[in-house]
Length: 481
Ligand code: SF4
Image 1: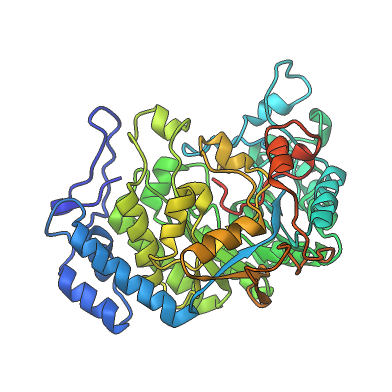
Image 2: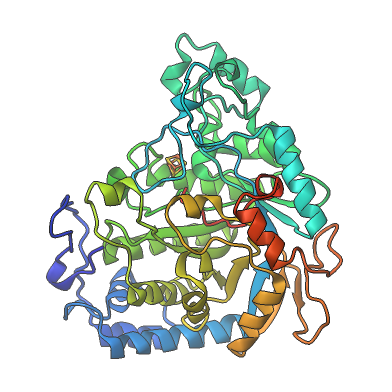
C-alpha cells in the first residue's frame, strides 16, 4: 500500500507494479488540514490525504503528527457519541462459499464448478439449505442473539425468487448470466427470498444482501434495485451490509475485483436499499494495492451517499488480511497496512465522515489490544459476539473467535469507557453494570441476560468438535466480500 511521498506509490520490491491515475498529491499542507479538522470544518479530499499520510511533504508517517491527528479524532468521538462503547449479540450465517467471481483479495470462495454433482473431488466449502439456515438462527436465538448477518458467495443456482428463476431458466444459455439450475448441484441454496424468509425467525434482525448479492439477485432480469430490495424486505430483510465496497474507485476495483460491480452500480444499489426503507452500513477494505488518495476518495463517496440517504448507521474500516490470498500470492503486495496506517484510517474516518455517527473497531482484523486502542483513535463500536468467524479465518486472520459479553465488559471498562449493549440499528441501548453477577444479552427475543455460552464450550465449537460449530458459526459483518 503506497502512501505517497512526492506522489510515489510503494510496490513490492519484486512483484506486480500497478500504475494509477489517482496519486496522493495535494495543494494543502498538513498543518492547514489539521487546523480545519480541529475546527470541525468539513474536510476536503486534500485535507483527508494530508491527515491520513501525516503530510505529503515528507516520506513515511511522522509519529508526532500522527498523535496529533489521533488526539483530534478521539476528541471528536467524545463530543459526538460520548464515552459509551457498543457491541451486539449476533450470529453469522454465511449460506454458501460457492462463487466464481474470482476477486483477488478473497480466500472465502470456492470455485462453484466444484460444487456441481458431476465434480468428484472435495471442494472444502459448504452450501446450506434454507432449512439449515433457519436451524442456525433458531439455535443462536436460544443463546440470546438478536442479529443474524449473512454474506455469501454468488452461487450460480441462486435466484431472487421463483419468478426470477423462471426468467433465468427461459434464457437460451443461462450460463451467460452466471446461472445454473439447482439440479446440477449436490445442495441447492434455494432462492434469496427463501433464505431471508428462513432466517427471519421471531424478531431477529436480518442483516444481509450486499450490493453485489443484490446484483446477482437481478441478473438477467429487467428489474431495478428498488424491486429487488423491496421483495427482500417483504421476505424479512431488515438492513443491508455495505460490504463489497472494497475501495470505491474503479481503477482499484479493476485490479482487485474485476468481476464485481463498479462503483456507480454499488452506489445505485445502496441508494435503492435506503429508498425502500432499509438501514445500511458502510465499509472500506484497505491495505492492499490502493494508496492514500484512493482511501480518501472512498470516504468522500460514503459521505456523499450519506448526505443523500441518511441510512448509514456505522462505518467499518477493514484492514486487509493478505495471507493466503491471490493478491499476496501473485506478488501484488508484500504485506498489509501498518499499525500506524490502521490508526490513521480509523481517525480520518471519524474526522472525514462528519455525517456518520458510529465508527467500528474490528478486533477480528486488528486483534484485541489494537482493537481496544482504536477506541481511542475515533472508534466507538466494538462489533459483536462471535462463535466462530469462518470468512476471516479462511483468509488467514488470527482473531476470529467467540467473544462473550463478560469479556466485552472487562475490556471496555479496562480503558475507562462504558460498555453498552446495542441493537443493530443503535436505537436500543443498554448500559451494562460491570458489577452484575451475570452478564449476557437482553435485547434478543429469547435473551434473558444470562451468558450466551461459556468460553470452553465456545472453543470446542470453533474447532469443529461439536455439531454446534456448523449450526451456529460466526457473528461478524466484516466479511471479505
Ligand atoms: S469477495 Fe465475494 S464475490 Fe468476490 S470471490 Fe469472494 S465470495 Fe465471491
